[in-house]
Image (cartoon, rainbow, N blue to C red; front, side, top):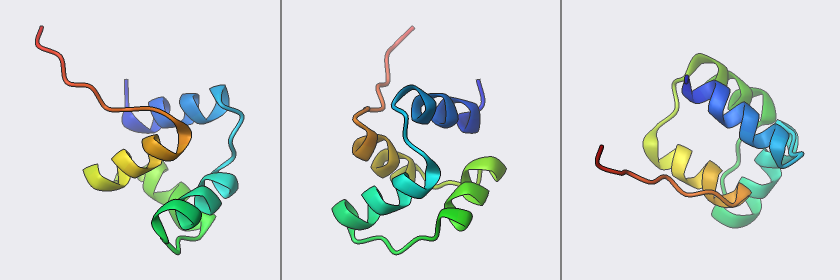
Length: 68
């Protein structure tokens, strides 16, 4: 599954819009990111790992690496 699809499905599951996500990132990490910019990063899959960790953190998820 593509990262953008996974993020979008988690946001939908938690009933969080990209606009709300931008506010949550501002509150917790003092990141001044416009919802439009955040949406472009997600859609184009040009998101850094650290940013992905922060996004998942504010919506209540962790990245887990598990050996197959």
